[in-house]
Length: 163
Image (cartoon, rainbow, N blue to C red; front, side, top):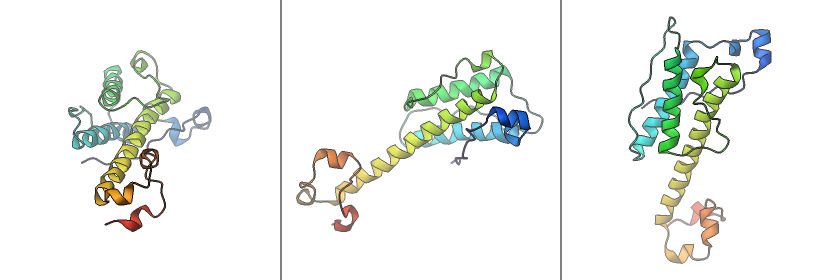
């Protein structure tokens, strides 16, 4: 399975002005974006979502993404959101291939991936906590309301009184 690489989502105009490393996109940046797409699609597939493998490119030093490559990346992110969830605050990126990319556009690409991963991690976390409930008897759980359980099992000493 692929691994998640923390995205860069804080590029700014000062990076461009000062010509910092964030001002330039290279093969490592594109491979990180493509790899994170693969990570999310593989993770969703492993959780039972019927998402198909994502077509990606392994960029090398000579590779320059074309308009169609950017479209494919945007389509892959849209597919992941369609199969899983469209995070609050996501930025529509479907029109990126029709324009010249700037630092904000690339930030949006990576931020959308980061938001999806955060939601996925939370879902897995809460699924695992709910899964822990099967280790308790009704007598142990009946003192807690549905809301308390739903909020993430925020009651005292939750893991200490396992059967």
